[in-house]
Length: 226
Image (tube, rainbow, N blue to C red):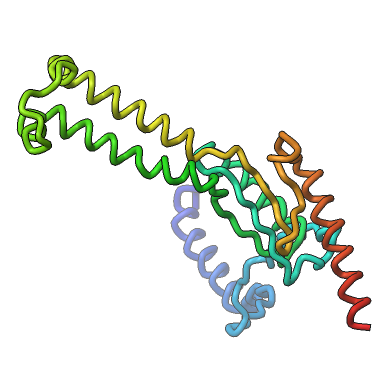
C-alpha cells in the first residue's frame, strides 16, 4: 500500500488511541482559591479625626482685685462742653480696673443766676420771632399805636433777623450752661476736680487716685469694725 492509502487508515487509529489515553488519565485537581474572610458586621470606617481644642486667652485679672465692690464713683461733667466722650472713656477704664465698682454720670449744673438767665433766652427768642412776624398787631395790644422805627428795620430783613436771633440765642444759652467741670467723686468724696486743677485727669492718675482712696476707706472700715 502506498502512502496515499495509509493516511486514511492511520488517522482514525491515531485519534482512537488519543481518546483512550484521555479517558484513562485522571482529571487535574481544581485550582485552590485563596481564603477570603468576610465579616458582614465590620464596615469600613474613616480614620478618626483628631479634635483640636481651641484655647482662648483668659481675661487678665485686675491688679486691684475686687476692692471696688460696693463702691460708687460719680463723674459730674459739663454736658454742653462735649465732655461726655471723656466721661465714657474714664467709666470703661474704672470698671475694668476695679471689677464690681459702680460708675454714675451726671451733668454738673451751673450757678443759679446762670441757670435762670439760660431759661429766659428761649423766651426772648420766641418773643423776637413773634414781633417780627406779627408786630403790627402786637404793638397796638401793648398800647403803642405806631410801631418804632427799629421794628421796620428788623422787618425789612426778617429772615436774616430770625437766623441771627436763633444762632446768637443758642450760643448765649450754651455759654450760660457751660461750667467746664469734670469732677470725680468716690462715695461722695472728691477724688479729682478739673475746676481746681484746671485740666483733665489722666487715666493712670485717676485710677491711682481711686485705688488710694479705696484702700484707705477699707482700712478705715476695718478699724471701725474692730
